[in-house]
Image (cartoon, rainbow, N blue to C red; front, side, top):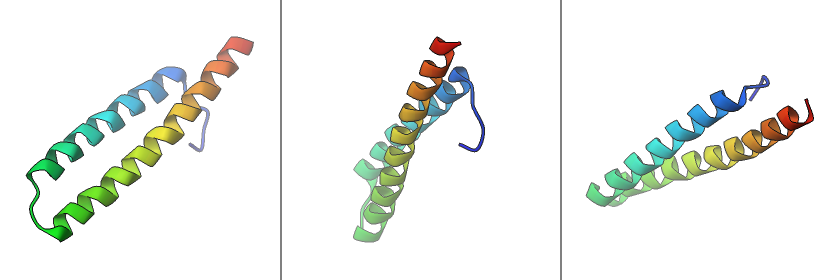
Length: 68
């Protein structure tokens, strides 16, 4: 992120990304056709990378607040 988000803001984004991942998994179950499956897989991969980044950012925010 380009700014220091609060812990709560990061948690809200993590929750939204987790919801997106759940929805993509449901879509993947219903998808037919290789192209549709690949699009969903690509989006899922992007969301998982975003989740990983947000989890690291949350940990950093937690450490910042513990030092304050």
